[in-house]
Length: 192
Image (cartoon, rainbow, N blue to C red; front, side):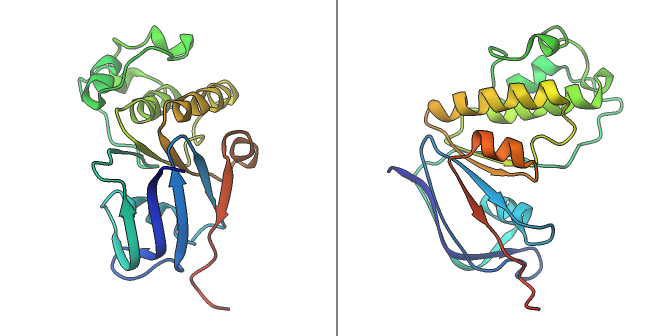
């Protein structure tokens, strides 16, 4: 398997270590889920891989020239921001081909005039379709209705088929079962 990313006993955190050491290997075209209860550092690990948080121990080995795209749970404030959906896609290098029909008709609308679910799906699509080798998704089904989750489920496998490796954090068990090739469980960094 062509490894895009290898984690060897990686400990991630913000001001200090927040995860137990984790080993993980992610190959091109593979979708891997990160599971575990709240507070084990799943989102922190994604942030560390994207350079937003720190790696305190272990080794992160990336394929040379690896391009990365990160979707976070943060929803940026949009009030008064005159950016359209089409402009958002252009900023990330994503195309509109494959967008669900219920969103295609809104590409020229300002983002602050879309519903929360429409904005979330459009931002998710912008990350998922960006020209990246590794896509990190943090709770991508949050704020999506059943149709949005179904559409994402279908197209996430399509994106992996193009050779992208995808690392997904999600508490949505049905979604994880439908899209992930395997799941890595993270454990609490706090010893009982």
